Amino acid sequence: MAKTLIRRMKDLPSTHLFGSGTPMCAGCGGLESLHQIYEILGPRTVFVNAAGCMTLLAIYPFTPFRGSWLYTAMASAPAGAQGIRDALDILLAQQRIGADEDLNVVVLTGDGSANGMGLSATSAAMERGLDFLYICYDNEGYGNTGQQFSAATPHGARTATSTGPHGFGGNKKDLFSIWAAHKPAYVATAIGAEPVDLARKVETAKQLKGPRLIITLAPCPPGWDFDPRDAADIGKLAVKTGIWPLKEYIDGKVVHSKIPHPRLPVEEYLKTQGRFNHLFQPQRDEALLAEIQDSVDRYWDGIAV
Amino acid sequence: MYRIRFHGRGGQGMKTASRVLGTAFFQEAFQVQDAPRYGAERRGAPIFAYVRASRTAINERGVINHPDLVAIADDSLISAPAAGVLQGIGPRTVMLINSHESPETWQHRLNLDNTILIVPAEDAVTDRADLPFAGMVCAGAAARLVGVIGREALATAIREELHTHGSGLVDRNIETALHTYDLMQDHANAVTEGTEISAKSYASPQWIELPLENAGSAAPSIHAAATSTLLKTGLWRTMRPVIDYDHCSHCWWVCSTFCPDSAIRVNEEGVPEIDYDHCKGCLICVAKCPPHAIEAIPENAAKAREEKAHATKTPDR
Image (tube, rainbow over the protein chains, first blue to last red):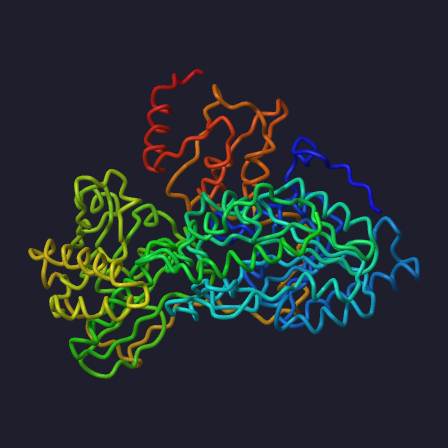
């Protein structure tokens, strides 16, 4: 198993490789995780970005990255990554670049692409054993176009297209398990509000070969309807209430990297966000609150601690 | 035809303001276009939305270049060229500004003789950047200024546009908009309809003709890293985080790691410094700072403090 060097906050990188001045929203939870990830991955990284909020990161001639960036359609980022990996491999084989000039190929997409349109291309890339890292910033909806529901929207959340009294009627797709079922080299969930956990996972992924995939929950001030200053606190609550389990799939096993204890009631997390207001006002929707708490409880009941 | 442009920052409700005004015009039997400027709509970033309303068919399309009324929810945008607030302002354009300062100050500052009106606010509002329901205040004021929209049409429009947000919020929005509508009584009809602009009279911009170049030279490869730092996103900020170094415990990794925008860096002594050219004012650092050594102060108060400090500095220091 890979060794990680980062054990506590003090070990985190002290310099920012990632440029400021991006057009992401103030308080963007996705950007909070991406800049931390980039500082671990380092500048020898090429990003393949499917359409989404982060498409806006690198609008010519501006980019926050120190290397290249490729923009693809929503369904095809892993295919773009295959092309880049192949090109690098050919250049390496022909000795036109040295091993020190090789690049990490990283796919960057939102939850819309990861859970929906891009899932088939991701599945195929894992099947081919593509050596790449996939980072999904999951803000649980199509945030760039005004937060319509996606396959990652949680049960009961209000979105631009789930405006009824009970919010979104569907359930968040279990992307971690879908990815892990392909038996890739590595799958993890993480969040920018837990920087040490995130850094260790990126370090681990960086040292492995083959398909490696990380989902970071991305608290989204406009999409989830909360004050930007609360983004990191809401991220912490997602972990403490157990609604966002931090875990890894590695060497064929699922391991939880942080088990909330004691586990706070899930409504402590829900009540921080306007998208769940209808669960509390004008009167408490006890049935729906119990349903959400029950699904979290059932998840953790199934985890052998 | 009325041509009205709403300027604000993402999150202030200016898109909703334009929808409400458009729907209110529609209630009064006008033909209407209302649209936000699409693109990177971001909370805190400059955005605009516009409304056209006419008794007859509207043949104009696209962004309004000759507004009859410009409503500005955040006066710090006026000095930002990227926000385009002053674009196409003519002598009869009325400006409605949410500002601490007087119309005369703005007339002087902008060197304009136009009618400039200040958005009314309660005395309790000490920081204009935090004016509650800024969008609805602007919509209510604009509805009164055009003089052809009744109270009932305005209330109906708000109900129609916001009904999914619950009756409590709808009522508060209606109350805010109608209160502003009534306060603007003295300025009713201040905004008059602009004339039709015919396609025949269209004067094309003074384009500079460029020969077609090959893509290699027309869109050169950028080899510089992190060029995004040339974009000063500090302009988005309405509240400024300020570190009190007497209380800072120099645990730089908290604020600098949680800052989504890489806008807090650590100097060689291990002291965090906020990059105000890029800080968007999300205030996550204020929320996360363990010794609570970061304070949020309104941007205009911070600027005033800076100017004062600058003025008292002796020149030879």
